[in-house]
Image (cartoon, rainbow, N blue to C red; front, side, top):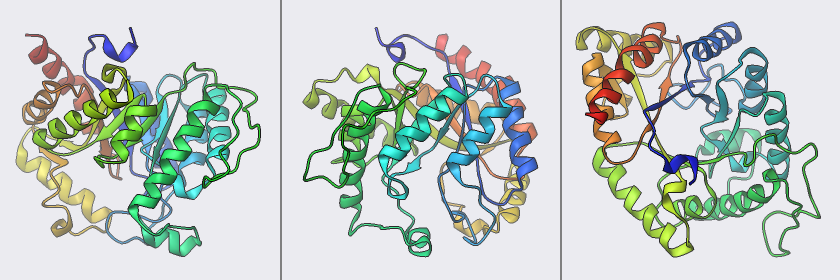
Length: 325
């Protein structure tokens, strides 16, 4: 049986926003996530800030993971998710197998189609003609990456976007397999790519949306002959935890001010969960009940110690107890 098909408790990861911070604070938060016992640690793969003013300090994704590998011991490391357009996928395979060796087998290869046109324009990176074209590139890239990070030699088809000639990774990844995470919920292309190649899938939104996307994924799995239980369902959220909802709201407003993000831009974003431990647990329990047992909390700078401690120390036990009862 694939590990993700076995009954498991709630799994928690943290994504630290890589904007509006300095390196000492970014590194200290990574160390704290590791010390608190979280399953995995993520950051974005963006070259400009994606909340509020785009012209804020931003740290690059892959070099961040390499640095974190040196200052953490147990937490798994990945991008949620890597921008396929930014780099040749053969180079991505090399960087990720390197990271897996550097971290003692803790790498997760996250990939998505990319969406932020401004950073592509500024850096002179080809953005493609459409979302559909970028998703076709992603599918081709992940097909190659599946072979490469699994230790196989790979040559590309002549008509594709990428050109590989008997490419292989040496040293290979320590993990067998090195897990691939695909982010997104596009029903025609992205979820088919998930069904074919991914070990982990990430989507966010309401219970109703997640249930629907999961049904679409199962249909794609049936079509390609894949056991859908082999794919770990993960969902992202942005919890801010305090003893009262009002206090959580004040903390959220302070975070957004620090990130130069007007509240009017995030008020309708249902992935921000500002509330008490009980309120956050209720939202998570509803998602556990439809098969999403892995939660990844996106955390803006300044990184919130209280939420970090209470999410794993108070909320997780509530969720596990409710699901098991």
